[in-house]
Length: 88
Image 1 (cartoon, helix red, strand yellow):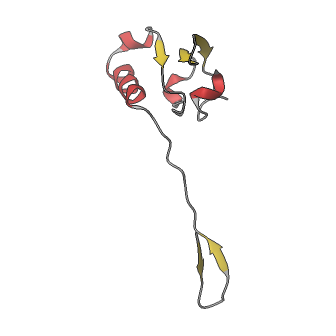
Image 2: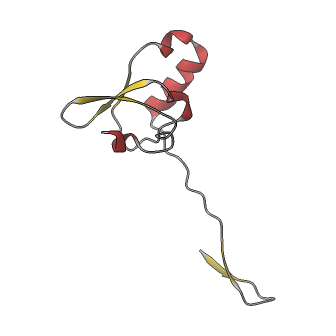
Image 3: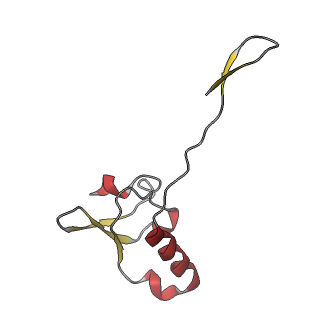
């Protein structure tokens, strides 16, 4: 979105940040990982590929559903912030 600065008539862009989308399943997993250490060892299955990878999943093995089969991937520091769909 652009607005006009009346004093100098310069066009400036507003800083917009896009919110990261986490599905309800990922919110639940993040809560369970923080509250109980048993969930650190369990497999993490992700159905929604448009979910952003949280930093909590770093160095974990996740299973991403590609629509046909489950794909096993390990989340590294380079994949944090991307979508799970990119991994499949």
